[in-house]
Image (cartoon, rainbow, N blue to C red; front, side, top):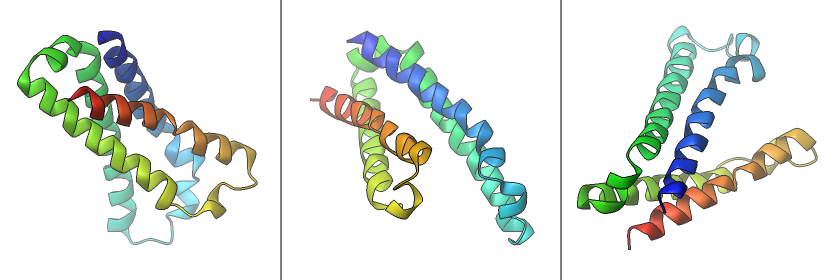
Length: 129
């Protein structure tokens, strides 16, 4: 069972590092230029903190798998993570327009790679029981 937490930890840490390419990949220099300074900076700052919290979730799963499995507090944390990633999975499929990915090979691939969240959501949510 610990191996699942370690896999999830590695996946989350990789996802966090992936955020580093967002500004270049999404062409933020051009795309965000029309926004006010506060909105531009909020995008950058919030992306950084999202990446940081995802990294820390991953680090927790990777470094503290045993404690997450065996303690009451750990199990509650796991339930919270499961709920978080379940909601994130729902938003992935219903919060973004299909126009963003349909008919585009790369975007469709990335969109469906998010099935990894199913693994996170189901494993973390059901582990609590």
